[in-house]
Length: 223
Image (tube, one colour):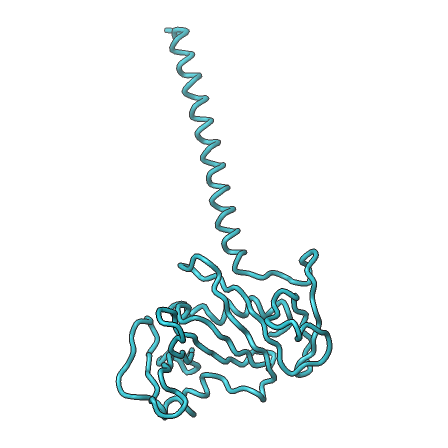
């Protein structure tokens, strides 16, 4: 029995609605994928040499040439090409769960001028540990340092299970209510030493911290 005109029209309309809904679903999916890609790229500096209009300065430290965007420098007096023995930078580290990029200061020096935090753990900090422990960072042990000497109010956080542990030393904040300020020194594959300064809120991302920083340091030649 042939379909009545109204039935045929209803079927045609239903097919059109289904087609439109499928199209909307595809658009939404593309928007979600695009947003996820944009968030991921926000934490990556990319190739600074290819960024249009990006003013850079080339400096040589410990025999290694670095090409650094001017906007990364902490101090204007360091913005000059040539040979240097220290470079002070500041970057915005994007970490999951933190709404705004986390400012991280980076001081690059020759390896001979710094000791890695993992070395200091056994050579210095271990002998200055006070009684008790500090909690609050999953995966890290927090040990307060003895109040005598220059370590009053400071805590060392370290990964006790790794042969090459993550180690950071954090000082009590100057202003009440502010997070602790932490320092971590690592030796980069290039042989340069990098001294990171950051708020203690980043400690809970310690698994990803060094890799995130290397995504900034790689494009400028520091690795």
